[in-house]
Image (tube, rainbow, N blue to C red; front, side):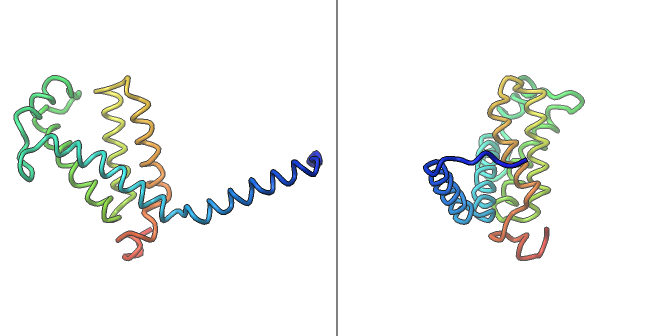
Length: 155
């Protein structure tokens, strides 16, 4: 099927629009998007992890209480869940910061996000969806050239 011809002024506007879009595509490369996404996801989870500890990785009494009351998970005792979540919120963001095992790290944090969504804060889906979109981008496209993954030739 042939496209309907547009008046000359519309073709000019469409051409200008497409030129701008193509320029943005070149300027905002996957490498830049991946780096910004890695930093954003890492910050979200790392800062959350830091609220659960004192010093380097000493889990606070308040963290254990949160996992006993507000963050209750089925099948996982609160003491174990507290350790798993706290360590994951430190370890995987550091890997993302480096761009090392990026796809695995993004998937691990996506799993954590889904757990939070389903069992802890089901009404927070807009926030969790925005996090999930970032992690899906990293899982699907990888860390980009500004990463250890690229240096090690990991896809």
